[in-house]
Every structure is written in structure tokens, then in C-alpha cells.
Image 1 (cartoon, helix red, strand yellow):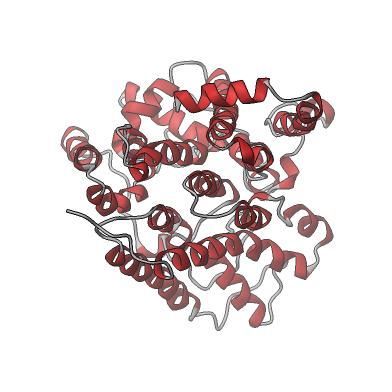
Image 2 (cartoon, rainbow, N blue to C red; image 1 turned 60 degrees about the vertical axis):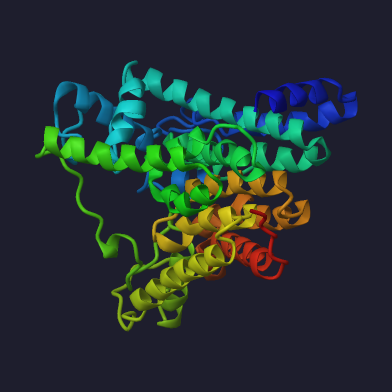
Length: 426
């Protein structure tokens, strides 16, 4: 990555004046996405100037007036750990102004939560937002350094990705997760000597990248798999022994698979699309509250969706088990969106890094990436639907993002099953 950064800086420094000026609006857009300053223009408001563009940062009943809500969940977990309080309890906030439940593995507390909790809350949030913004710029420059011919594709991908608004507003960790996967997996699929530490840390953060363990083993990264599994299992065991009363609630099936209730603004994954279509088919309005009825088939339909995707991943892995391709890594990468019901706008930062991975490995073309950007990276229909209360806009809102991950899954599946097998030499 160091070489890529250096090459990217050299390339950008050598741009002519016209292209430099064309990059300015992208940098200004990133500046406008920052979650600060809105209250100075609109008294009593909070967040950034573009906050209303996404439900994550614009919906009054979600995190509209609580910038940093998700960041403070990890921040306060670190503070509670240091003070000896229950990290997973819902009502034991120590230092943060507010916080959601801490839902991360115990090992995350040591390598992420405790360091983040050292400064005062607001200072820590500002530093975290600055880190995320810098990470976007670093990713942009590094990608330019690898593929300078895709300059404007990288500009749209890293600097004009609408879910960034919610990511920064909530102080989320999806960009960090995606970036760790991007730079941790590139040396793996390239067969080079680079470290897979990024994949290990990503697995400790959200756990689901551990599904790639069979692929990592096939690539000869046994040590990375040993570290990731060992730290997750060993960390959980040590936590249970040291703090038996301080345990996270077990993950239940109804927390993962969508049931037949009214779809809500915020969730935008394929399962929520199924729920929205079922809700409309039952004669209900997406904008008005109603008692659910006749929607008992939503849960089995979403269960079949998640189970079918798991079977697809298993079949794809079996086909390429000896030589996993970047497309197979990409299929496992996108599993989150099919197998978990709550995929919010900020979670699509994971798709942002996935597109970069697929472009850098030559798995998809820039045209395919542009099509996915229109679904997953362009502004959603949230604000128009919220203001106009027009039913078709609600349907667009619940289908736009999921259409992008479905398109990605189709492209990757075609790449895996419709291309010649990679010869394996002993």
C-alpha cells in the first residue's frame, strides 16, 4: 500500500490544471459530508449540512439529533471496561452523552474500544471523524496509484459515495471494516508476500469475514486463520471466565431473519425489500403505520433468501476450493447483505471497498462498477419520500440499495460459474 500511495501522490501532483479543478468539487463534497456545522445555520438542529439526505442521519426518530451515536457505543464500552462496569448492559453509560448497545466481540474492547475512550467524548468523536475522512482520502490516492486510468471512477467511488454521510454522522465502523478487507485481501489474492492482518482485524470487528477462512486456507494463509479464530474464540472464553456476569445476549434467529412486520426507514437490504413488497401486496402503505396481517410468509421467504445465498457460496467455494478467485472472495464479502436483516445505508460502505477490490483485481469493469454505484453509492430516495410521502418513492427507497448488491452477486456468480476453471499445478 505504501508504494501505491507514493505512486498516487506522484500522479495527482502531475495532473494538469483542468483535471485538478475537476477534482475540487469531489473534495468539497467530502467536506460537506462532515457531521458538523448544521446547528450554526439551523438552530436546534445537529449533524452536517447533508445530514437529511440519508435516513441514517436524517430521520428524526433514528440518529438525526444524536451525531456519533454508534461511535459512542464502542467509546463507552471502553470506558465501562476500564471502570469495571458491565460492557454489554443497555443502561450503564459511563462517559458518552448517549450510546447504542455494544454488539461487538469482547476482543474488540481491547484493541479498539479502550484506546478510543481515552480522550473526552466529543474530542474522541471529532478525532474519529477525522480519521475516517483521512482514510477515504488515503484509499482514493492509493487506488489512483494502482490504476491511474480509473481516476474519475475512484473519485466517484471514494469521494462521492452517499452512504458516507450516514457513516460520518453516526461515527460508524463500516468504512474501517471495508478498508481492512480491501488492503488485507489484495496481497492474498495476488499471491504476494503482503500481510493479511487487515482480514484478521476485520474478522475481530464484525466476525462475518471469518466466513472467508476456507478461502484463506486455500491461499496458504494458515497463520492468519489461526490468529483470527484463536483471538475470537480465546477472547470470548477468557471474557466468560474473567467476567461471567458481563456477557452479550445470544444471537437469535429473529435478530437475523426478517419477520412479517412493517418495513422501516433505515433498513435497506434484500430482506427489507422482500418485506416492503409483501407489505404493499397486503394493501398497506409504506408511509402509514398499520397492523401486520397475512405476512407470515415473509420470515420463510427471507430465510430461504439467506439460506439460498449460503448454498450459492458453498457451491461457488466447491468449484474454486483449490484456487479461490477474487470473485469468490467478493461473493463471500457481500454475504452480510443477504444473511442479515438490518443492513442500513452506512453498511454500504462495505460495498464501496468491495468495488475497489474488484476493480483493482480486474474482476469487473468500470461500467459494472458505475451501475452498482447508481444503486449503492448515489443518494437514495429517502429525503424525497420523507418530504413528498409518495408511495413509489418509498418502494424505490427499499429496493435501490438492495438492487446493487443483487447485481453484484449476479456478476460475481457469473464470473465464477461461467468462466473456465483456473488450472492448478502441484
